[in-house]
Image 1 (cartoon, rainbow over the protein chains, first blue to last red):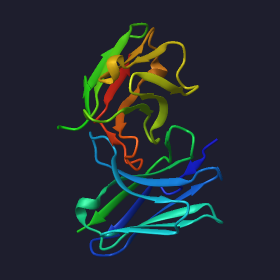
Image 2 (cartoon, each protein chain N blue to C red; image 1 turned 45 degrees about the horizontal axis):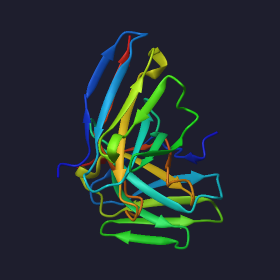
Image 3 (cartoon, chains in turn green, purple; image 1 turned 60 degrees about the horizontal axis):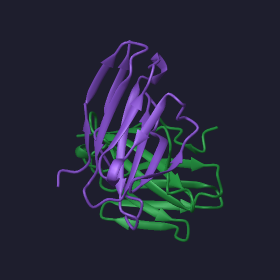
Image 4 (spheres, helix red, strand yellow; image 1 turned 120 degrees about the vertical axis):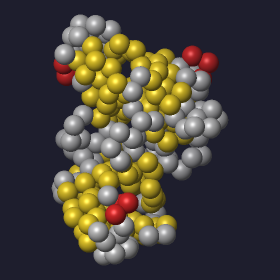
Amino acid sequence: DQQVKQNSPSLSVQEGRISILNCDYTNSMFDYFLWYKKYPAEGPTFLISISSIKDKNEDGRFTVFLNKSAKHLSLHIVPSQPGDSAVYFCAASRSGSARQLTFGSGTQLTVLP
Amino acid sequence: DTGVSQDPRHKITKRGQNVTFRCDPISEHNRLYWYRQTLGQGPEFLTYFQNEAQLEKSRLLSDRFSAERPKGSFSTLEIQRTEQGDSAMYLCASSLDSGGLGYTFGSGTRLTVV
């Protein structure tokens, strides 16, 4: 039972355009959501997070949107750069779980120059 | 501080052998996590330490798996009687209690069981 789903295994975007990565979850107990970026041969790197009390969080070129009623979140990268090419993982956690993370299966983003 | 360090980076072992991996977290981090990642999947939670106490274990962690964190510093993950299904990337992460959930992951140990 996949509680966090990333239905697009890959996404290609032109440099300078917007990248939108999507994530759906099924467990309504999740109250904190994160995005991680992973380059080959490296561990995942924390990118941005959002609490369930918010619907938007921005950090530079990265914005995460949360739609609790739809159990959906998305990561927007504007403008996209070739260095953004990586696998992006959506993750979720719930209070009282020692903050263990449940990850999606990832989306490979390729930003074309 | 060089981040979370894992050793070895790669391990090839024959089925049935025991293997042990080491993780050195960021020194001031009191929480330490082990995750496992297989090809095409996201990391899956295995176990969690708060200082030296192992507080949570996933049902993925069969009795062939054991983890320790003596003195609340480095941690080891041992797999006994390895099986081919154990082949995966084993990731260690650490954080502070108030770290906003932004774990710092190590680069992982890739295990191949032949």
